[in-house]
Image 1 (tube, rainbow, N blue to C red):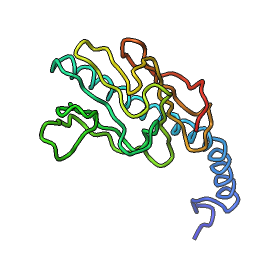
Image 2: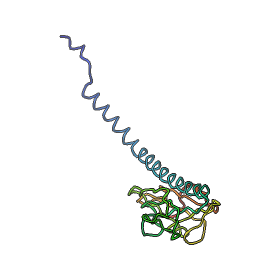
Image 3: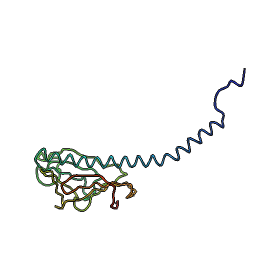
Image 4: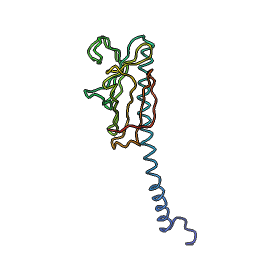
Length: 178
């Protein structure tokens, strides 16, 4: 038996390989976490923009007022989800048992790691008119949503702004996070 023909790794080669993998992982993991966090924020922000666009287009298409309202009883807190609906009974709340109200879509609560808050104009709901313009629960327009991580890092957040005619756009948050 010839010992020189054995193929494989020595213990030293294996230890060096494991050390290199550990170093590369230690360097790359924080960057990967940051990319994943940014991606999740962008996904949640785009979901909100899509829901506002849906409400606006349905109001125009159906020639009626379409509401977007937070789920829950706390004003200005939207991370528990929101409903898009036609308010047939006129009370500005989606009543599940009322056949006059029509639910168009429900957006479920965000992951526990995120908050979604609005400024002082929207509070509980906003409504798109058949013209595509919108109104809010306070009657004033021009407001924004703040999507933040639970660590309240303003640099790791998104701002969804509604302009005066009801179009939403996503940008970096320049407001404080809750």
